[in-house]
Amino acid sequence: MSVVGSYEGVIGVDVGGTRIKAALVDDAGRILARAGCPTPDRSDPEAVLSAVAEIVKALRQDEQIGGLGVAVPGIIDEPRGVAVLAANLGWRDTPVRDLLAARTGLPVTLGHDVRSACLAEWQVGAGRRSSDLLLVTLGTGIGAGVVADGRLLRGGGYAGQLGHVVVDPDGDACGCGQRGCLATVASATSLVRRYQERTSRADLSAAEVMRRASAGDPAAVAVVTDATSALAGALASAVTVFGSDTVVVGGGLALAGEQLLAPVRAALRESLTFQRKPTVVAAELGDESGVVGAALLARTWPDPAGSP
Ligand SMILES: [Zn+2]
Image (cartoon, rainbow, N blue to C red; front, side, top):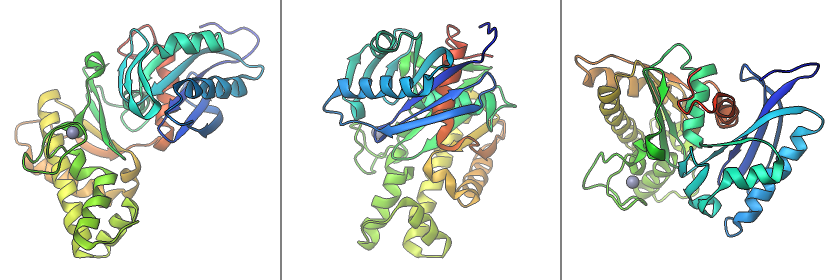
């Protein structure tokens, strides 16, 4: 990408179920400008595309833009630029890349949201010194990104579904059709639900459950201990398979910091014997990892591994 006389950035857009976030990002992954809006109702998939096009227009202004990277949840066919299934956005087999390229006149790269976040944490965030890292995001659900031997795995759009690894075959039903998935024990949503089942206290956030656990509330302690144990178990399996030396923990629950990380780190170290003992650290980019990663993905294309 050559620039003469004026700055050329890339726009990254993170299309979430409740908000669309966008940013103009430079070569080094630094954010130069931001924009955002609520996500339109999923019953109107066209409206989501229009909202993305509008936000890009607002960010562009007079800047020369080198490209547009768009990160989306669900099952994403990145080489074809198709959202195979993005239930929160009402997209099914939607050719998002081509539709947005037509609306914006920009070259568009479509990526998965957690994979994009992983790319960002790997290249400019908490995992930048590693070529074998796992990113796990703990939010409404649980997602993961895997970098192995300096390549970001894609698995045809199916890699990284750590939240649907079964940790308790007799556990709670999961939306995916299985029972006892990690997401039913260790996601922010499940912390709230499991605490509510024990106490009948409704309308508490996951952050409040964490706070109660740190204050010694027995029900909260039990729920959080179950979550950290299950997470450590699933991470131990992943580390054993991929040889990861770094685990980066992101998503809303990671804001709990060492309260969450310390027990996961301890349980993980205890369960591993001959394997690498990964460092376990909090993500650095917070809720901007998606937009930064989407922009980096656009910059690294056509190398689909996102290698620098
Ligand atoms: Zn599941």
